[in-house]
Length: 153
Image (cartoon, rainbow, N blue to C red; front, side, top):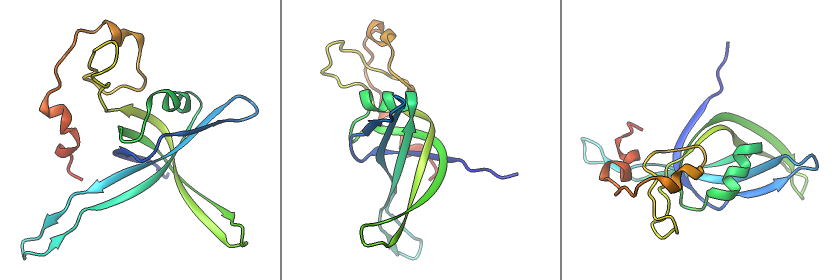
């Protein structure tokens, strides 16, 4: 038995690039940044913050959702599988690309306060729904803004 599962919580590095195959299937790709905080060891050694960049690939409905609702800087939770592929560049050198094929995604960035509905989405969700426009306005709480701060990694 083997397992290939990735869980990432990070910030979108650029707006998704979405293309449609001849069959009409949507494919989105964009980068996600995850960071380890800077810290100081017991002996006084300072370890700087480290950011890793991940190439995400989303298919079909997730890709269409990304195209409509995901933007640079948004906070995302994703689950998926690691896939590595190779290609030959223009000089004929073999290059390798590691990508995360996303199976599940939750958008953690609240809706912008300036939107026409004036609502706030307090819970992560896979895709915004029309029910959001009927929700009462809720003020954001500090716990929501620091969701990633409580994670042990």
